[in-house]
Image (cartoon, rainbow, N blue to C red; front, top):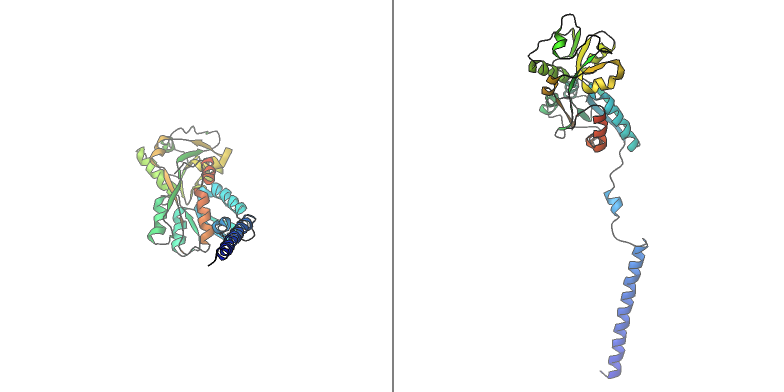
Length: 275
């Protein structure tokens, strides 16, 4: 090969390398402008699916005010969803679930009543404690009977209402009475804590043993009296996704809200204790 031929070949090689470099630069420039990027879009790949439909929540009666508020917050955050609630005694709700009632979430006022559902294997996730609740005595406004202790509820002539012993608030009341070595015969046993509180609000009873959260929710309709034995009867509140939940994805999101910092703010504002 002559010297002239070698020079010509080297020039072609240099020119080819330059073209390759220009093409690479052009690709980078096009990528920066968003025109021909082959990189995955991080925002789209991490986006969660849009939630919709109804979430059915079976929840202890004492959760009515706080869960109703959280349901409204959930609906605002996820347009197209609706949260419906069935509030009642945890034992009754658990029996409904094991009996086949369609629901997505169960929030119970005690591990014992949650166990009714888990023993029947009707849960899809392990129950997690999301709040705790403590008892308080609800009296008529102004506390006309001067109730200042749990023992005062045993006074003759005082009409006292308790929750049924199978209901978490009733079981907790029995623990508190046992802790104080006290015996109490109420004028009635009610099926859930709201029913017990209502008896006092309607002045059909002088006092009732309910949760702090219920006294808080009642405002000036009742007056609350704390008692030390309540520390021996604090209830844990577990929540779980149910098996065959009709709207499992939205239900998981609702449970996440309940357990989130925002959810905990709503619960503590209502008088619940941190889990």
